[in-house]
Length: 320
Image 1 (tube, rainbow, N blue to C red):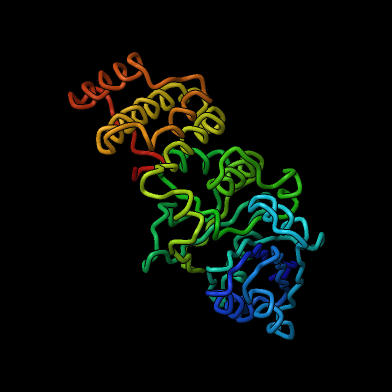
Image 2 (cartoon, rainbow, N blue to C red):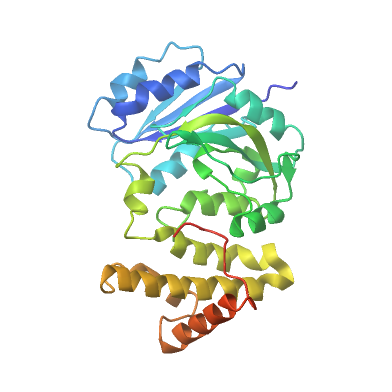
């Protein structure tokens, strides 16, 4: 099997708590042609000291340091820009996550199945169990637009923090990570790459994604923000037309009615609108409003669902 160069990329700030465990998992990789690019974002803890203690490991560490602390998205972009230009693949690894010894080996095997594969995912452990991402177990390669459609329908799950990308496609998007999403910008990036490349998937658990109170998911997607759903509206509006084709209008209306009902439910459970401004803003960004008309349409849709005439939205995000 060919062994193209792979760069694991880790942007890090004050990551001392779990850093050694992550670094050990990289050094334990069985894949032979590998470097670890780390961008240290002017940390104030022992992050730099811990990284430097692994400087003589089997997998070379390409350590870079910021003189000032950059915002998270800017730091991530800078980290990927520092990947060697001759690396065929780049693979994000957050400082509090780990990968199995065969992770890179298995992901490269799938990537080498088709030169048009731009994004490669895998099963992984999260919250103590291996997640089911719903991808057809008899397939490893999916058309990019098909993968985006399946993601929006939640018939397949893209977990961006445990994915590898082919660098020729990464270099086609500048900067790699872009707004307006503040937490889901990495999922936005993967779905964008899939508009001009294919998706590969390894049906094997190859990593562990840690969940704790300081993770991006915990901060940006706390129980009262319900940001997954506002992200869903943005992603549906941006990628839905190409992914659904002639079925887009119907899918979009189904999602919007679902979203309006969720906002109504959140308003009732929260006792007001204090946690809902991001959702009002999300609706406004696509030319919609949370008003009498939209609420009436959403409730009429609910009546038809209860009568079995229409189906409720069961796609992304699927749990809010």
